[in-house]
Amino acid sequence: MYRLAVNIATKSRVARNSAQQISSNLRWNRNYAAKDIKFGVDARALMLRGVEELADAVKVTMGPKARYVILIGTTCATVLTRAIYSEGCKSVAAGMNAMDLRRGITMAVDSVVTNLKSRARMISTSEEIAQVGTISANGEREIGELIAKAMEKVGKEGVITISVCAIKAPGFGENRKSNLHDLATLTGGEVITEELGMNLEKMSPEMLGTCKRVTISKDDTVILDGAGDKKAIEERCEQIRSSIELSTSDYDKEKLQERLAKLSGGVAVLKIGGASEAEVGEKKDRVTDALNATKAAVEEGIVPGGGVALLYASKELDNLQTANFDQKIGVQIIQNALKAPVHTIASNAGVEGAVIVGKLLEQDNPDLGYDAAKGQYVDMVKEGIIDPLKVIRTALTDAASVSSLLTTTEAVIVELPKEEKESPAMPGMGDY
Image 1 (spheres, rainbow, N blue to C red):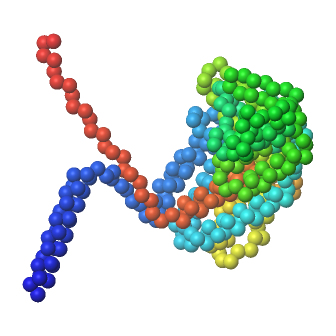
Image 2 (tube, helix red, strand yellow; image 1 turned 120 degrees about the vertical axis):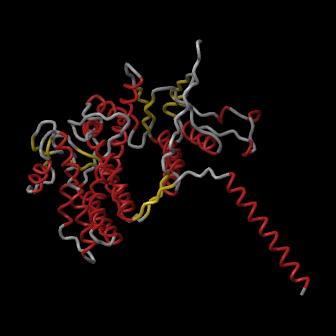
Image 3 (cartoon, rainbow, N blue to C red; image 1 turned 180 degrees about the horizontal axis):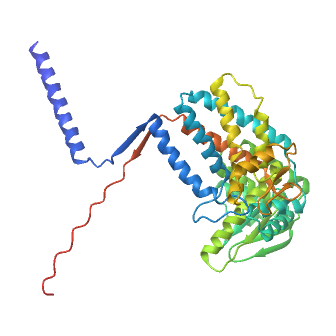
């Protein structure tokens, strides 16, 4: 009994000492930032305020009569996110079930995407490609034609690189080995490596590949018209395509796409110049947007631009069946949000957006839209005002995903800004 009491006393003393030590450490290392926690309606209201501030800054850049915004990119997804999240917050505050709203939103988006895919048109001519590039570059025809020429030269699977500085040759580790095997296939040569039991001493001229032209500079090497077997090159390309489909890494997919381009198509470099660094950066951003939009259009096709495709797709949601009333409200939220792009473009052109939206919805022609540059109702496809399906589809799905996540959020934890203490005034210098 005495021994048991001693053991208990000893363990209690050890526990007490440990607690004191932990308390001491906490007391001396308490440099944690203060946190602010908001719940429910208050949390969603604060997030909505941030979304609206961002959307207000971005929306003025939409359309042919848009204005520039410093340091902010333009995106349809931001305008859609604001429209969806704003209505979602109101519905939740009115007592709607947030999860049912989310299900309704998801159902509506899936229906709209299916509708857009059914109405998309594939493009192939240089003129159509130039139209997409021009629209995405804020109407600069020169940029659209430049991209069309580049894509015509390198092919559908080619890579077009925009650069304002020297480009360092890619490839290291396993990727470098794969590039060497690609080069061997392209030129009809062999990779000389110790892994295959080969070395330079045993090399013979038959192992070398050939091509029509090689351009070598300080920073890069360009090999044109390799003499490799066409069937072997196509088999190598098919192997890379299969690897792209199976890959789950964006980085690996990018590198595989570069390899595929070098084998099946080509690589074009667009060099951007300007009078100042700011002008070069702004022009590069516009060309990058136009290039990405053009590649997306070639990949999945085009739909009427200016927000018209989304506007007419909203009609398809009238008869969408839902499980309950709250899900129906979710569908209506998407239906109203699909009007936001046309409304915003018209407002930026100085006309009443609601009037334009109303007149277009009265028509049965899904290609009819409002040309904000001319102030006229026109056939958007014939006028070359088109949008890549992939861009519109991604904007809608991303906006719905982000908005649904924010709508179902019940708590927000943020760091409070630290109060900076004023530095003390400098002491007087006397007579000096």
